[in-house]
Length: 448
Image (tube, rainbow, N blue to C red):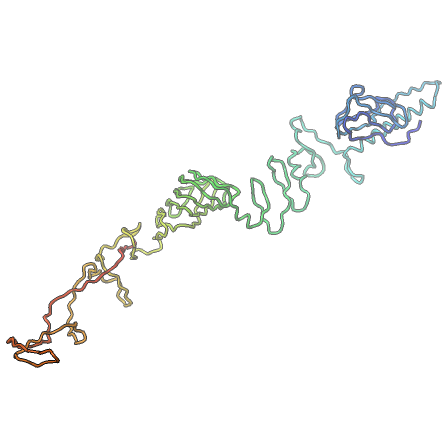
């Protein structure tokens, strides 16, 4: 019988509970078939039976139990590589026996070709030969490793699979590789123009520059060692627990924080504050810190909020920055005591007025007029008639008798014996004026 086809395998995707699968090529015996379900070899008689052995058009493989839906079934001819035809001297030489032997040899050849078709091979134009496949010295030595070309490019070597994974994920120009959440190599596709590489949730990501600079994180409770979010650039700090340090992120990291409550920042070698002094915050203050090494050491480099006193401890809104004034500077303060770094000038007389001068002499008078009680000042001056106060004079006559009548009224003049007279000079009696003053208490303090 002739062998006119090179087909020696059939592949199927099973329907639900399917049991019968056809093979469309010739076999010589039931055992000449290898049957696989999902890549697992099955056992003749136990798992399946064969019909059609010897038929040119093939036959069927029937499973004893229906195959699960969508499972892959492969039926492959695998003739045993033996020569079973025995030719005896002067014996019969039948056409059937001889043709069967020839068919068997061709089947073996076709089966080998099928196996070689699934093998890894160099291309036809390759001049490489005798390339050995390394297997390692033990099971442990070759576990989780793959073949890869050595550095010379002339042979194969075993490499850890993760190294090869890092290369295999690259698919396009600009792709980069990073470990994913489970630590396996993963591709990060190239970003777009203007984006920068940043970190979010522990993974590298491409972000717009503005997003990379500003990333508002969650609110964080204050603590002795403050733990800021690694992937945030700005956090609100809640609570009043004193902060003595900040946990490590990475050197050269900059972080900005907003204080929702009053608390103390304590200066130390690892939390460096201006003038080596503590700071008491108030609600609404903001600070910018930079981690300058891996210790970690953090340094305060920016401040927004209440103005700090010279010693950086007073949390009073609008305090005085004493360092900006030279020693000996005098300033008025509307308060009872001098601020830190200043001394009250007690040479100034109490209750003295402040006078603005434009001349060459300034600040020379210690105050001599007490505005609270007032001081009389005498100055000579003759009053004119217009300046005189409104008043009356009593005229006393020197004679008596009847002057006459005006209408029905008679006017008589009585003689009192006093001579009438007036004088231009007053008596010079002292008098006072009430002045109603309003004033604001201040002190003068000198910068130490």
